[in-house]
Image 1 (cartoon, helix red, strand yellow):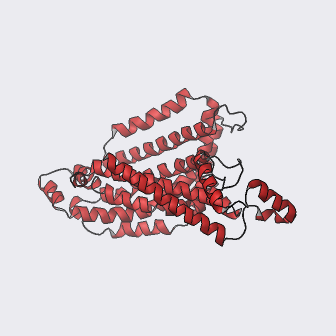
Image 2 (cartoon, helix red, strand yellow):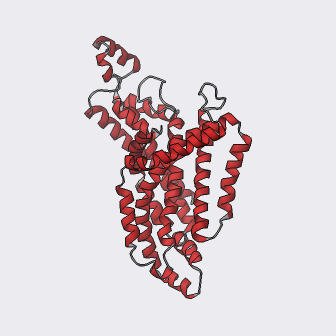
Length: 376
């Protein structure tokens, strides 16, 4: 296992560096201009040349490439190979994206299981025409349409909460907590609320309480509301408004694809002999689905999720520009609009690293969960 992990890490790092080297050279050679080009309307050519010289824009590409790589690993997202220290902090870009992605994945994954949960075991191997049609409808919904459907409801709910509990947004200068710590607490809050919603839906659909999920979500909420000051709690609740808008749009966008994937995987697994054996032994539907179908579906579902990660990040550009959420998607959009190709490359680097980490994690978890893989 250790050799496998080391091999995957080394292979991923080499592949990422080679890919980014090709991309860096391609972008800087083929695309004219740089992030200083828009300033030509405000500065003279002599001033632009002096600024480029100061920032090292005229340095050889290989110097700018390695300087850019070091800058990204030192914690900045927009160093871009130039001699400057004014880039955006990496964690302040990554954390907002994780804040909406993890709850969206969790909610969409559970909702995608509902058609299979409500289908009798004897019919799991058959096509689910209604749920496939509904999934196609979800996929075809454009983010602004979804925002139009949910925006007023969320706004009214948060207006009611703000008036009832007298919540006001605190200026950033007054907050005594770092931005990264605030983002981590907000992530815990969003995930715990999403997990509580998922567990509540599970109770309504299966009439079964999963104590571990409820206890985990409630413990996080207790930690936030009991051990944090009122100003911080107020800001967390108010900042979660746009986050839940983004989560709602992403969940609806993801759930359509996840339903189609889960339906296909469930149909294939339901035809396998061990499912027929479990039915013959009289196992309950809940046990067959959770112990025999859901566990075996992890591998192909997670693989599809990993392959779709770049498209997920690409969708964030549209979703975040719709809801006003500040994450990797909006930063990527701003970088493209500002002709800062090197900042976009920094985001591509983060995307490549996230994809590699997720792929390795999925491979390890699959070995742990699936005994068939473990025996190979």
